[in-house]
Length: 245
Image (cartoon, rainbow, N blue to C red; front, side):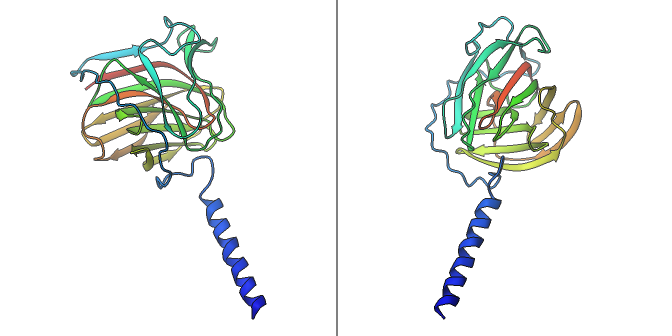
């Protein structure tokens, strides 16, 4: 009887370990179960942009080795502070500079953000070119929109290790996927993300092809925009464009 009890207990322990492992992985937080441990600083208000107003950022006039003048860094989740710097890249779509996130902290639930300070947007079209350079835990690039602060925003992102494109809302630091598609994301090559958001309707394009068409009611008001990576992703960005609709 004692042996039977021990065997049953061992079986239960193995099942619990299997379940825990099955929920882990490069991007295994879709249920939003990870708490946000960081306390975010409230965003400085930015003027809501009227239809037709456009901003473009190619980082070519920004000082190398620093955060771009019209951006500031932030972090969702845990782990080390993000390291956003302007640097030269001979492959950049617009020469000579890119904006790079170079920190390689392997904390899984860690999302470095580069938030644009110029304005807030409700309905918008937004695009950026990116190159996934390296990352063992993740190799991801994304765009944020209708951002309230570093714990509350929409994010659409592509992942080179997983070969997918996903749309999330982040609420109080908890990230939940509500749409997605499988795509090929080649590391070391430039790709383009583009999103159109009008009311509760969000359409996302990858390399010019529509991949996601979804609706969501989480964030209805205007918010800031920005760039995003995950965990130890070293990612380069160029030619960020946003226009109010």
